[in-house]
Amino acid sequence: TPARAAGIVTGRQRPSTASGTVFVTLEDETGYVNVIVWPHLIERQRRELLGARLMGVEGVLEREGEVMHLVARRLTDHSALLGRLATPSRDFH
Picture 1 (spheres, rainbow, N blue to C red):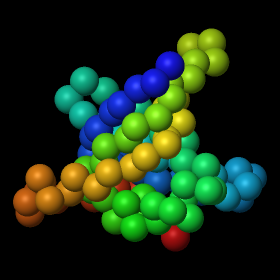
Picture 2: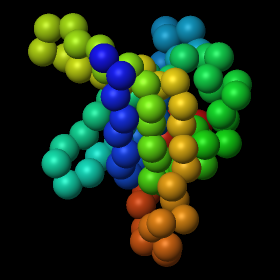
Picture 3: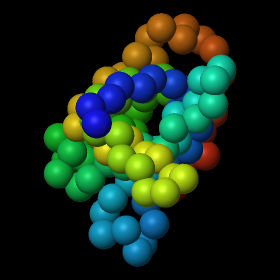
């Protein structure tokens, strides 16, 4: 199902077992969404992926039982809308 989401980036993870895939958690006042970013998109949108504090995502919503995630097709950095608001995320290094 095509879907869009936006929220504060609260975490980025790149597990060694994930073949280069990055998992991003976005959060807003209603809850959170888990975003999957495949390696081909990471190459094209590294700046948005690693630099955004407030991120918009266009992609496909997938559900496996009770678990839902958004597979990203496009990332947008909306951080300028936050001004100087502190929004630390828990990132991989």
